[in-house]
Image (cartoon, rainbow, N blue to C red; front, side, top):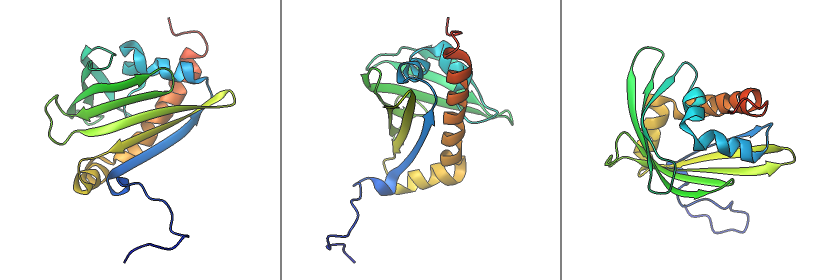
Length: 168
């Protein structure tokens, strides 16, 4: 069946491979952006509820990488590797995210920060190589709920720590 009528909604060519999560954070986007740029910040909020992060290497620049392990509340370790592919302060960060630098199943993630008055809307759009890999991330790792929890932790960190001047 094809959608040819004028009323057909616009659909992204990658919609069946995407997970998109957004949240409004009560802080200026410069502070939200800062929370992504320094490992001392990331290690305090990154990941779903109950997870902690150990960084093995961190270089925030295009072509740089963040090599880290997420520790689940059940003691399971999850190796992760993020390479930054685009950085436009303070509005956009694009990455390639997998278990290692040569992970054939790595996905693209774009973070967009948009001012909304004195607050910031953050959108986290992950695009997987295949629909099956997206579905696996949703079913096995609950990536949608994990993403919502991660952005909630970011919001709490930015509003409670950074905005109050505790960023030093």
